[in-house]
Amino acid sequence: MQGKIIKGIAGFYYVYAEETDTIYECKAKGIFRNRKVKPLVGDMVAIEVLDAAQATGSITEILPRKNELIRPASANVDQAMVIFAATNPEPNFHLLDRFLVMMDYQNVPTVICFNKEDLIGAEEKERLREIYAGADCQIVFTSTYEKTGIDKVCAILEDKTTVLAGPSGVGKSSMTNLLLSDARMETGGISKIGRGRHTTRHSEIFHISGRSYLMDTPGFTSMNLPELEKEDLRFYFPEFEPLEGSCRFNGCVHMNEPDCAVKAAVSDGKIHKMRYESYTTMYQELKEQKKY
Image (cartoon, rainbow, N blue to C red; front, top):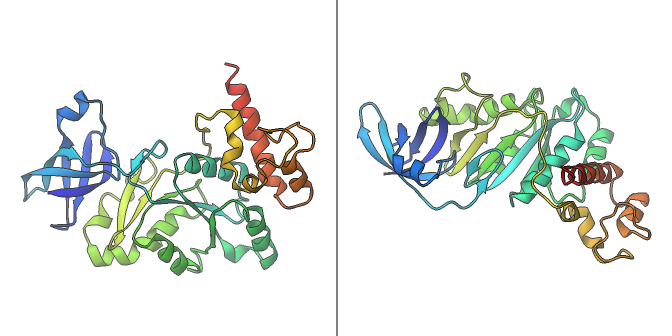
């Protein structure tokens, strides 16, 4: 039988098998440990059912992965949705930008969701859109309090396995509960595994409907940069891409070089200065890392 790992805790893996609409509590066979392969949340696996009544089994094979994320540790992810509050608390743009770089580094498209749109006006909404206009990300505004924008989110999640991430206090749990409320009633099984006891400590996948899955991850307040060369960071800011080759110097890193097309675009307002500030902060951090 085949299924998807939806949760892993203390050496136990919970595998949802669509065939029987059952979640099996499984251990991984020792062969994986010997090969130094660890099953990940999101893995498609083959299992041997040991006790059908108790829904226990053993993972016998990990099927080929489409991709593997370093953080959050997971497999077979189609996209990430990162949630930040539009206000209260004010969005931490540097943290958001670091997340975008991390996901781009792992070739995972990202959707930015600004929640609590009921607390801001049209002008602030436009300002947030402008900051990320060139970031090659879909942007959606929601209010879990007023339940607005949820239909758009559902459409974005359809037929995909989506990592849901964001810092604490932005409405991520409220969003997860809203998205799962219908699925809980319809499927009964997959959405009710231990929800609430471990929500902030590990990644867990929930079945929304059909082939739509949501991976809830622990809230984060910081994020390390991937192991990038500082000279390569510019390739993870899509706004810079159209200007590649337009600077005076080949390989310009858009920091202190004269006649830099990117810095000119920032001065002209074509690239948002907050995005450029995030870039320079990350560049300096990568530069410092290489010293040690």
